[in-house]
Length: 114
Image (cartoon, rainbow, N blue to C red; front, side, top):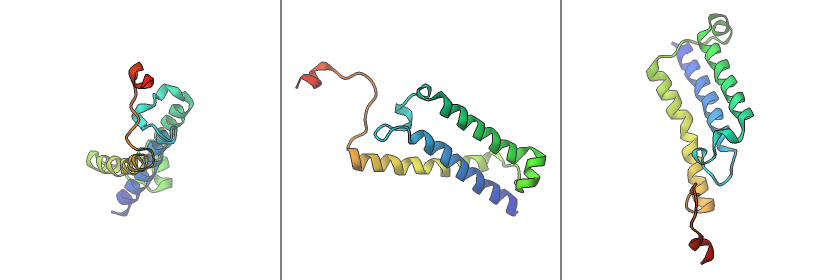
């Protein structure tokens, strides 16, 4: 029973870092406010990291080395919920430091002229 828990811990830490790396692209903007196309190398690095994680969990030779166990769907849900909790803390930090969230999109000239 230790291997599924160890695997969930590993997956949570890896996923949290992979989510956070997208958050580090901008100090003021949230993850969803900066297009993924702004840094294709980062997207490729994250995709290869996710692939490595999945191989370490589901490919028997690597699973034996890392002593991981396959995760069920509900376990992945827990992993992703816990991994994304850090984004909430970063959003709160942004709100405290910079006030209201930065909005994407066009602003009217009237706001700039006033």
